[in-house]
Each structure stands twice: as C-alpha cells, then as structure tokens.
Length: 228
Image 1 (cartoon, one colour):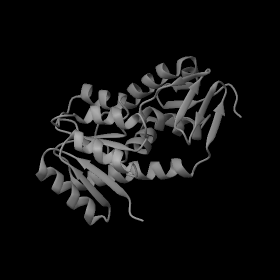
Image 2 (cartoon, rainbow, N blue to C red):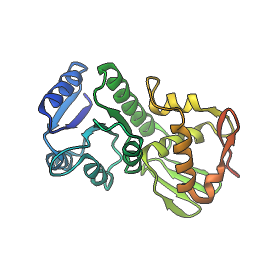
Image 3 (cartoon, one colour):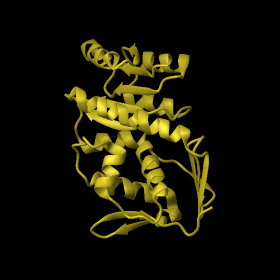
Image 4 (cartoon, rainbow, N blue to C red):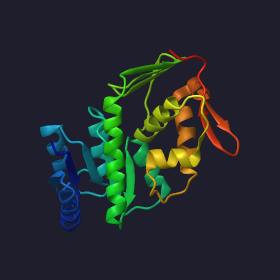
C-alpha cells in the first residue's frame, strides 16, 4: 500500500510541482489550497503518513494547522516556507514540526527530507512500546514522555533526539552523528542547531535533563541513573 502525503500550499504552481515530484516517486498525494482545507482533509481521513505545510497561507497559517494536528496526531509534518530566519525555524520545531525546508529548494533535497521523516515514522512504529530510564519514562506507542512523574511536552525534533540518545545510552554521540540521524545527511544548516535543541530538551525534561551529559569537544551522551 502506497504512503499518502497531504500537501497544503496556496500557490497552486508550487502545489502542482510538489505533487508531480511525489507522484513520480509513487506516493499518493492529496492537495489543499489553504490551511482550512488542509485541516478538513486531515480530519476527514487521518491516515496520512506525512503532511507538508506552507507556513504563509490565507485563512489558517501552517503553524496553526500544525498545532491543531498535534492535538490528535504525531504524524510527521514538514514545514515549507520562504522564511529563512532561525526564529521561524525554532518556532516551527516548538510547535511540533518534524523538519523545515526553505524555498527555493532542490527536489532531491526535499525527497531526502521526506524519506528521512517517513523512515523514522516506520522505525518508531516497529520499536518496543515502553521504555524507562531512571525517572524518565517514554510511551513509544502514545509518543508521551514522563519526566519525574510529570508529562514533558516536547517538539518532534526534541523527541527524536531523546529517542536517539536513549538508543545509544552511555555512548558518546557526536554532533555530526546526531545531525545526520535526525536532520538527514543533506542538512545545510548550522551544526549549532544540535546545541540549541539539546538545551531546549534539557529544559523541557526538568531534572531529568541532567541525564544528557555534555562531552566537551565531542558531543553528548545519555547517562541515566538506572534503566529498566
């Protein structure tokens, strides 16, 4: 069964271009001309494997659509926008975006990001359902994180980073390893984005954020008090 992708962009030329790229790769594509239509399409089916949202849309912007999707689903969401500043990027991740691609983009780069998001979704689906390390518990099926008895609300990238660190607990991961694993080998942004997201993740985990240790000059390591 082919994977289904929802595209929302008020620029019909951009929509058609994206649809053409994806359909050539044998994905099923559903198009929406604005945020309101996108939300209606998503709620009508809720079986999408990926959602691509333009941030600047009439009626309901991409960030608002993303927030409403996150109320009921952890489907990967890729933000597509002409905005290139880091503030917009951080805001997108804060609201639960899986990835962020600026216009204009190269078709191969976009496809690499899409495949990375879909591959991660498949890995998460096939993994065990529950993990606990010290005072930190992760419900993989429900995509919920409990830190010291309280639910931690994480962005999609923070959640990916946490799982990757957990999978490699007590192993030092370099920034390059984390960047390639979470953002993809073709990511052209600043490697310091890792430090920014680790800082955000530590804050959101409260005292459990101390499980993420900095290894000066190399990267980070997840070292919980105990594991079950």
